[in-house]
Image 1 (spheres, helix red, strand yellow):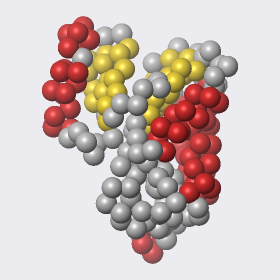
Image 2 (image 1 turned 180 degrees about the horizontal axis):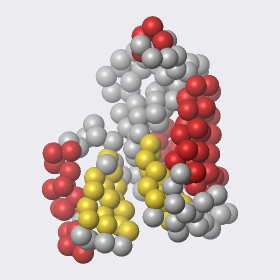
Image 3 (image 1 turned 90 degrees about the vertical axis):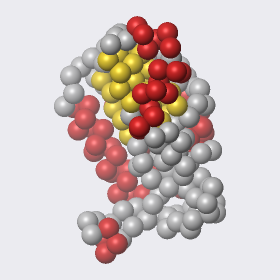
Image 4 (image 1 turned 90 degrees about the horizontal axis):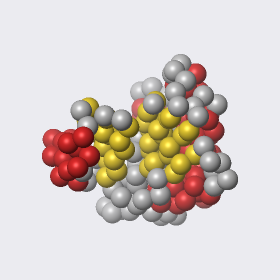
Length: 191
């Protein structure tokens, strides 16, 4: 199996080279970067039966039309209206799954909402599920949990955005949440 992780992509963030010290960032740069990244990863990974694509949250910079973080209300610089940003995020996720299908027999998609996209993360999951509903090679984890787990053979993988679970506590939480599976696995990793 191959695991393709994406986290904190913040599609819709607007940054200037003078602020980043590196380069400009906007929706156009984001989708080009995401596509180039998944192309590189899939092209250079071994062909396996299963590929897991896991979005660890904050796929979007904003979660609504307020251009602010949902909980604290921090004002954010964004590249366009929410609806335009959301479409780019959907394009990114469906592109990732379609690219993985070129090399892997089965693709399992899972995502977790982050602190920037608490509601939108659920909508992204539903969209990916609907987009691939007639493709038996794509399985979408449709659970709305903040912490998710996958088992592949003797390996257990845990996933969380990180704003609600510290890595220091991740192993203990994994063991408590999955007592039976935990004892059946040899390798355990948390992302």
